[in-house]
Image (cartoon, rainbow, N blue to C red; front, side, top):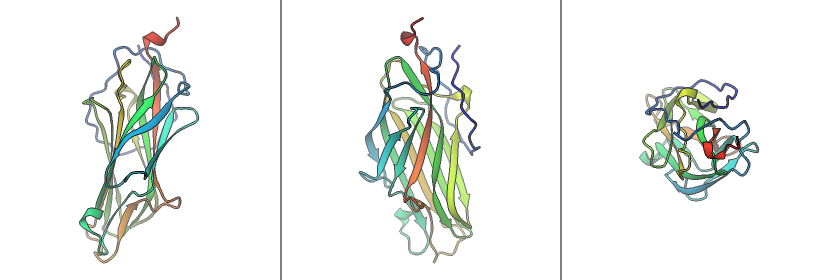
Length: 222
């Protein structure tokens, strides 16, 4: 039976999952942490009002068990003369995850970080989704932040171990990651601006996706 690599517990989150867990039929024993050598990730396509061309970047961790996406122009705002188009921003990235033959992976969690300044009565929402290209299994999470609030924020998506969705062994499927930032004015003073997003001290919103690795039977030497 397949076993997943365990990792330290992460913060709890609000989650709404629309999926059935899938383990690739060809999957076998797990790859010991860290991930296999030679893992690289590149952005195949990027779309969305929150990430114009060149405003999103991806970086793989040294131990290949995570990758981070940073967004330099990603923010939603309401109030103070904001336009309707400012209330909601989104970003959709299609990623090519290159790994040595015989390995498969699943996204086990995602950490979202940024900054928000919310007037009393305002509400900010972060929607997060990730799934493999061509697959019907989608992980979707929704997080809310209520005003008054002024400071850094962090939301974490957690996929239960028994419900991980693995890339099918031997198949080339890109990974899709989507986020949406939404700002609701609510009962706040319409003359004052509320925002969530890319006004953090380092000027960016960042999401770190944590990966679990597993070997496929064809890669076993025993």
